[in-house]
Image 1: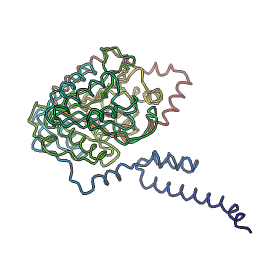
Image 2: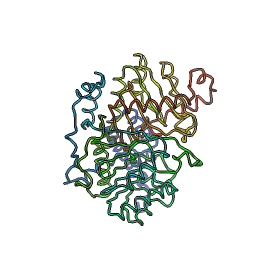
Image 3: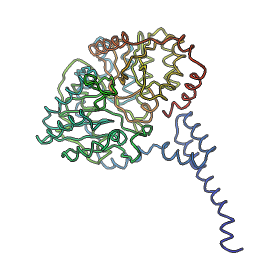
Image 4: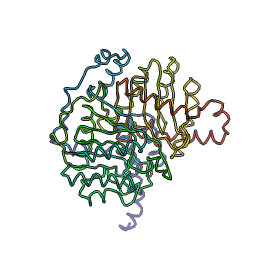
Length: 483
């Protein structure tokens, strides 16, 4: 047999062996690395029934590379400092300040989950829409004397984006150290990316996990969804609000978006700064240290708070576990506001159990969503919650992007995370839990106003939907871990 004939006769066997070997190696990796049985089963099915496509998709989208890359970045470097440990208090402090025993238990669970301290002496102010948040943020940037840390999932090249650029440029000209971190996908919501103009203005800007995929591809994993602004290491802002003109309803934008943001003053601001510094070091290799970035922070209020960093790395699953702990601790009421509601089976079970215990549960969802498939998948899971007595309110347009949770009119969870697998398992998020009666009353007032303008969903409305709609919703519900 000639050499070329031998090669032609054997290459199909070599290709088959290579595909089988790659499939087997991928299956072993899935079994060893994937903690979630549903995710593991889904990937295994795809890999074995569509070997070439499944293997390629798994190694592109299914593998968490953050841990390995982070270890490389931080090799030989010290942890980012947090000088405000003297503000830390133990869980019993909450009861001494008038909190209930269930809140003390919740605090203990959260401390063990996050390994972060509770800090007293904080003041949190609710900012409604960009109409309130943006002027306050720009004013803070204008008063900066030493440093500015800004992290945003989206930072658009529009009228308000230009105002933030100008404020940052003016601060740098005054000698202020400024760092701007934008997610690699979020930076491409407008073209050209704002990072180019920021660098042209002399501002140090970087893209987290920079990618060359088209801007419209939003369904990618491992995105930095955090929204953090820290001025001089002392004054912070966080919540669900990106930087884009759509958030300022007073300007009548073409695609208006409701949202909530929060001004945070006091020692817990150091947690915002620490989280930003870790993300910045991961992205650029530069360590932010010293009093310019981490000064002493005096008490500014009576609130007790804790920062919760969550992501597909060493912080994996912390926020979801905190939410489960809060649902189990609730005695009277739970209120949830989220734009995307695709809780996993454990969260759904915890909500149903709380309702069966007699806890009043209000869930606020947008009547009109900006992501149709997510809305359809969400609607497929609402019937079970309604049957257990949960109340679901559909907030009227404009689209409500707010994210907040209130338990027993005393505990508030605020930040960037949605109630879906993308936020709770695949993206990097930052939230703050607050044991603060004054803040809880302000949040309750905001929720009451939403309830008055919302429409309550009932079982009769769901039953009246046609078979085609129900099948469509249940079909997209199958993909809820990936939406």
